[in-house]
Length: 214
Length: 214
DNA sequence: TTGATTTAATTAACGGTGTTAAGTAAATTT
DNA sequence: AAATTTACTTAACACCGTTAATTAAATCAA
Image 1 (spheres, chains in turn brown, green, yellow, orange):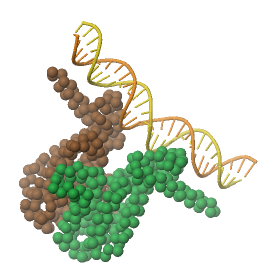
Image 2 (cartoon, chains in turn orange, brown, yellow, red):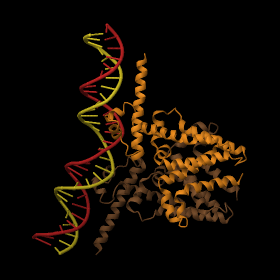
Image 3 (cartoon, helix red, strand yellow):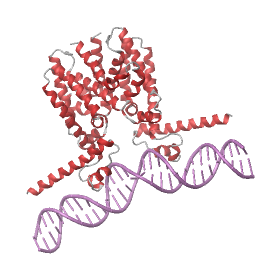
Image 4 (cartoon, protein in one colour):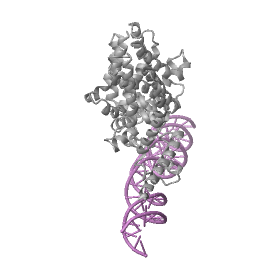
């Protein structure tokens, strides 16, 4: 009964084709402008065909969100070879920030928009958010390693992990939503150059805090 | 020539009525569900009338965003009487977090969504983001005060202000977008109770860091 | 192999959205 | 009293996500 398998394979191929088209539109025009109709036109099928493969638009949003985590994992995989945990924490932060700068639309989908999480909640309530947990667990381990090396000892691991995540996410999201841009213009009258290295330098300040109370 | 003034006053009244209707819908149904047509129905006028008073929907978004900053200022005004700058910094952070919890939809409009900033950029490129700068300046002054009292001295004021903002914003936005919810469930297996006090406790960890290197 | 049935894709349609152009009635000015 | 400006409406454009009904193709059973 290899026919069922062939169909299943074809189905997966088709889902991938739809996702590829969605990704293309999404990267160039953003999520809002990526309509079901446009995706359908891209793969030269009728709009309703999409619904035979994806439940609704949030389903596609979640698939793209996963795609984004794939990209992120690619970058983070290199960090496994950084032995010193505090160096690894630094590198993770910088990598996270650089990812947000390089792929702002993916970052938005992964950490700012509600749709993907809503999809998870609505259609797979018992399932975990695998992508997020994977990254967060890596962070937790690194924090644990830092503590073993005498950094911020006596601080709860989980809280330090969440704090570190919040720092970089706060920076990245305020950057992407262009909130920083509108206050940086007026306030940092002295160092206008900083604009593009602003995220790095504020994250640097956080690292200094951590370093000082070793 | 009091007639011109009367008209101007009427116009302002009308704008306020539209905004009130928009606010009502926005608070109950959220931004996406607040359509121009529904706002029009609420005030019993034709949809196109709205456009005689607001340029487009992002204009209304920005007006609501300002409305939100009004609410925030209300809360923050009490903090002016906290003399000790580090206590004030603590209180500001807690107030900010509590605001995000109490008014998640407003918080979203003020700090997460792109629309209001886009409106500012598109229609008033030379104007400043007054609301944001006001709050940020208060923060800068408080940070300056902390430094004068020996806290995180030798750290640049601007960077410390941005870091502090990033910490609380990171926490609040990951909370509102329900990203925390999906990792907290599995990871904090020990302390499930924390869920609602999670933001407070992570912010507490940040404060501890600051306190330790006084 | 032929007829029945499942599968895959389509067309048509529903009920919305933001926004603009054209038209109308009332208020104001000349 | 006529001309003009103002305030507002109706009609329409070009979209959107999604569902129901329908047709064409592939598969299965006899």
